Image 1 (cartoon, rainbow, N blue to C red):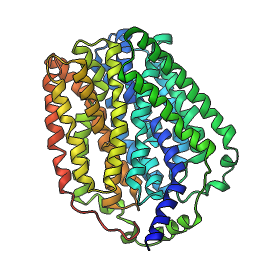
Image 2 (cartoon, one colour):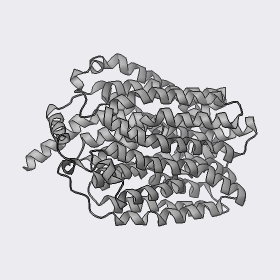
Image 3 (spheres, rainbow, N blue to C red):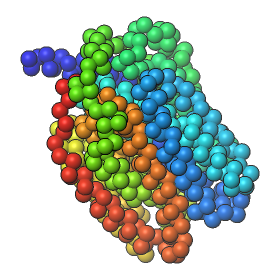
Image 4 (cartoon, helix red, strand yellow):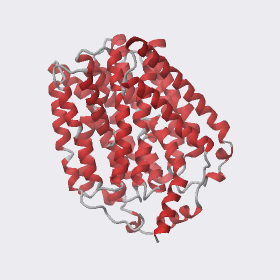
Length: 488
């Protein structure tokens, strides 16, 4: 029996690693990190060109997330109905185009909000809602680690996107930078998804024509990676000439090496899909909901669902709203813009650590307890940044702590959905909960920026955020033991 469990565990990894690799790149170059991680770079140039205050520029995230609040549940339902692969392939293209459309801003505030809302409408299929459905279906024993490895890419690609956008903006202007950002998912993520991303209900990898011709298909991804690497290294080396090697620049170079790993694995690795796993999955879906999980209609009547919705809404405001404002916060503390961007980049390093460590821990320990520790600890960092004087060392430590907490929010949410509600309507349930999370992350940046402008400083705003973070992490401890689903 032990040998059978070991074989099943190995089979999970053998069959699932290509899905994790493709999902990591797809999410990393998707709607979750790219608009949010880079908007801080564009605040200055757009404010200067149109004469807008920073809070007005950041109000784009509110329009974006209000649209996401409507679209995300719909995307979840479509994914449950038609499958994750179809939704992902279409959404990567439409998301890339919607990012390029940001270059068309004319100074009309209405057009500005509308184009940002389009990102949510056309890019929601690149959110973790779709990718984590496939990852959850492929993994059981190693589910936490698989989710952590999948979602760690948001911090890595988000950090690289900051460098990339900053360098393109310096050379060619912010409009060209948005076009370049929109090309990244199309050039890099789309070919990888064609080759490697599939759910348990899709055709096995050996039967796919894209797998047979994976080398010419993945050549496009290598070209996109080369473009990304060139401009990131240009920004890093020019910064190093001005101020020497710092942790953020070393981290950027390391991240460039890391993002090539999944692409190299898919190029030289063998892509397989085990038929027995697909048969098990088909059998489970034919059984009643008690064997597979709750239906969406049943879940929305449960207190756990609404508690998670409210808690993650406030948590996303407290953590997610700070990250796009980091550059503003550091500039207000006396740092130059290049120094502020460099320190903010370190969130990516902390996100990497948070997701890998958090994913490992929730496979062995009670996930709500781990989540409470990870999500409440950044409150200390927010308090550290609330002082009038912040040293470079203190700012670095604070950013690492914030990123460590920000690295696990929707990892834990995805895991908790699977453990407490099952996988039957996973995408629909996670889609609604993610819409609450996204709403907070979108409304938070302009809200906090506006409050800081009213106060004349960021001190009290960061203290309030720290308090809210702790208070709304505590209810997670009331979730109780995991639900037992025979299908899981």
